[in-house]
Image (spheres, helix red, strand yellow):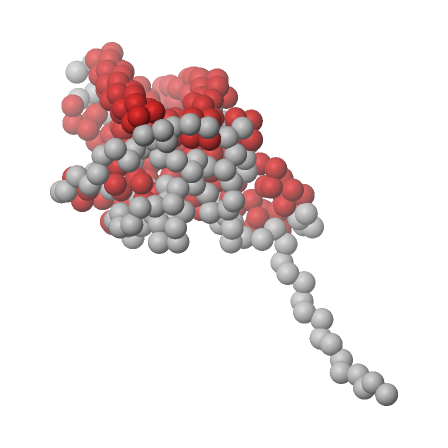
Amino acid sequence: MTLDQIQEWGTAFDDGFFLIGAAILLIEIAKGLFNRSLKGRGFMDMVASISTQIPSVLIEIFVFSFAYAGWALLAENAVPWTLPVTIGTVALTLLACDFIYYWEHRIAHEVRLFWTQHAVHHSSRFMNVSVAIRFGPLEGFLSVLFHTPLVLIGFPPEIVITGILVVLAYQTWIHTELIGKLGVLDAFLNTPANHRVHHGCDDKYIDKNYGGILIIWDRLFGTYQREEERPVYGLKRDFSSVNPFVVWFSELPEFFRELGKAQTLGEGLRYAFGRPGHAAARPKPPAVKQEATEHV
């Protein structure tokens, strides 16, 4: 197996899941038109989801082109060995990329700075295939950061890029309500039922099911939740805008407003790298003790 063959296989995999996602989306649209549920806000939400590709693709072309060039330089000049290109290496790379995606995804939820980008993906109150391509414009930077160690330990950059694309492409079809539970597949794969949970803002569903292709990482690290009642989709806070520009940058105004209130560098860092909704930019002032007074 050559690097060209691997890249061709990755492209074919990506195209295949794109076609599957497109078919599901067409069925979703037809169903929505038939039962008259796809109108007004639902339609505009789809448009907003698709519109996020404008900044996302433009930036990611630059990010991943730069990353590939940087990884190639690292592999050539800083890494004394490279793993051989075999079917086993490709399988191992895919497994490693899926494992890394779990942690990349989890940290995107648990760190306020990174949540400013990933929240875009969760800001829809609907669940359909168009949400699968609803991305924050700068999410690619985190992916590059997390996958760089694979290159440093000898994985060929071409295979790492292919692994990233395969993990993302797989997830296209799981953003739907058309497909119910899939029995034993739900136990080890990220399926539509498992991923609907991930998009739920119900307390029991928040920050669950981070997996890309495999759901076993969630089972191993205690973040698995099976689908029970139908989730309420979207952000926990009140956000339902379908304005593309508001969707693209939905979290940034509040982030910079709160960051600007920080009185010290430490407070700013605690806010930027704390948990969304849990970390305050500033500590609360101590309560003022009220002295009792006599009224004459």
